[in-house]
Length: 209
Image (cartoon, rainbow, N blue to C red; front, side, top):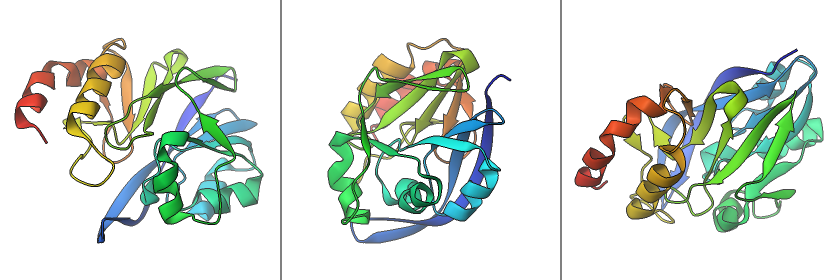
């Protein structure tokens, strides 16, 4: 059976630099009826485990280490035995949320993860966070962008560990180079496509988030 993408929305709090905001997060599950990978274990480990419906969880992939994307990762790992994978440049952010638990493995640029016959390639896309990554699945014509690229522009860069010129470079060099029909599945909100976002790069730069 070919891999499919399941989508779950969980709700909770994003906290950074002394502020807190209520957020809805996209949790993406890629797999078939027997195995899966979770991208961003946000807020509710029980709901994510229920959505797996008995499938073997091969990995919990963190697009970055802001608390709203990783807060449920240890509980989900404990429940399923799956390893938590994170880019090493986001360890300082990770430790703000989970000081007594470290990820189980590192994500590196160009690394390939395979589940249900589908390959996801890790693209290091810093800017929103130093260790931010996207996961490109050409077989599904999809890229999972976390908070790097949204419908309407780049992720926020107004807080600690973020940098606007860096996120623009990441999007321009790593994401807009993908086929225009590629579906962009984001960390929050609606999906879009590379082709829909590419024409607006100069406009984003002019806005200079």
